[in-house]
Image (cartoon, rainbow, N blue to C red):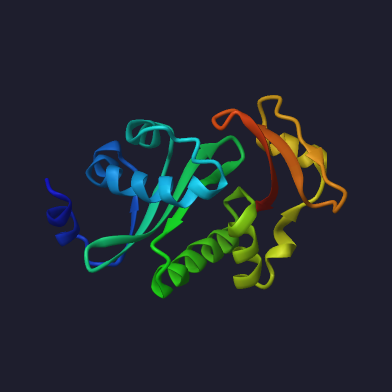
Length: 179
């Protein structure tokens, strides 16, 4: 089935995808968006379309005129869903949809994300109460990350640095917890 045929059966602009078959239909388009979005900060940890499909859980997408405008990629963890990638086409609508998705995640309290750089600045600007969800405790952050991952807290008390295996270097982040 072609992507345009797939979208013709979708009556809403916002769609949640979970099966590998659904993801394969739009995988290349989503992967290209993620590569472009993460290029300024050293790249995405997903190195191929197949790795993106196999290494992720649910995808939330929005489309405008049949073209994907917003995508949020999740991974299932022991403590809930983790947002692992976000990309938009930078249109006003895609920004609005991204805010709707993240705000809904905050409200249903099912997961967490690590954010940094331009995305962090944007999220704090657009979601006024986001600071209420910041995890500030080193032990809690390490517990949520699991698998023996360790962090080094920054002097500001909210940022931490941890090694990102898929990128091969350390990166400063903050954790937003919806759980």
